[in-house]
Length: 318
Image (cartoon, rainbow, N blue to C red; front, side, top):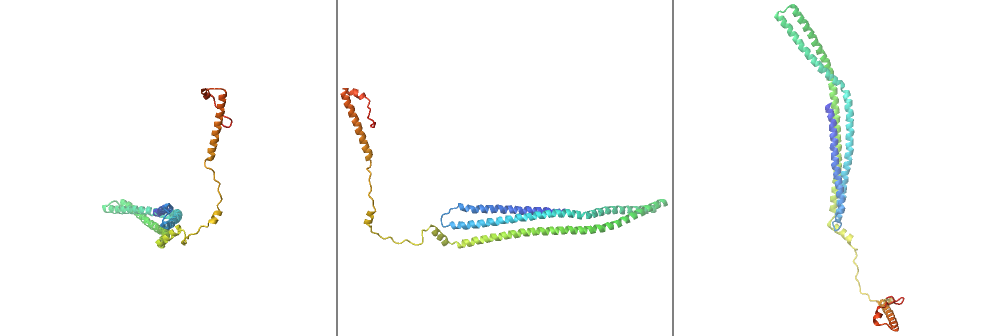
């Protein structure tokens, strides 16, 4: 029965093993996906660029293969757990079924001990009776010993008969129970082998897919020749496949050129500013002349005239 329970522990250990394998495959798949994305960070210049596309596609497919393996392993783990639950139910039922065998074991153990004691008692009483006869004991003592010897003999014979009956039941129960446990163990081992076979086939199928991806990568690299890489580079950077024709000298058509020209009005560069400046200067001079004329009329001296404030005419503040 304990050996049967150890089978359940083996089932749990197998589930843990498959789970650990799935964790490793998942980490590998994520790393491959990250590697495929990193290709986008590589230089996109030069003739080698198309090769990175081949690497990226192949790496993405490998990541997908390992991701598929993770999914299938997780499904297998669910099957193992389901089988483990079935084992527990089987163990509980088996314990009830073999309870009669446990009773038979206890009975034969008990009867064996009783039989051994009765045999020892029988031997002791027989020896005691013979000793009394040889030593010339009284008839009363000899008769008393004979009664005890006969009682021990009957008890011993009784236990021998009981032992035979108990032994028959014990052997029958043990045979049936041993066969039951063996059937359980055979079923357990066959189920475990089926799980392992399913695991092996799953890994084998994924490895075949991985092999196909590698084969495809090899073929793509074989087909990607130096000439094809240079051709792709030329097509992506080129301006066309036809060369431009020669350029010939063309005479200028003067008449048509002159008709298309419109006369332009030129503005005198800086004249407006100069003219305005000259106008302002004339206004200032006119104001000064008027002031000098008034000064002469009022008979002011030159020094007094220098202290007079100059009030320009309106619009001639400059």
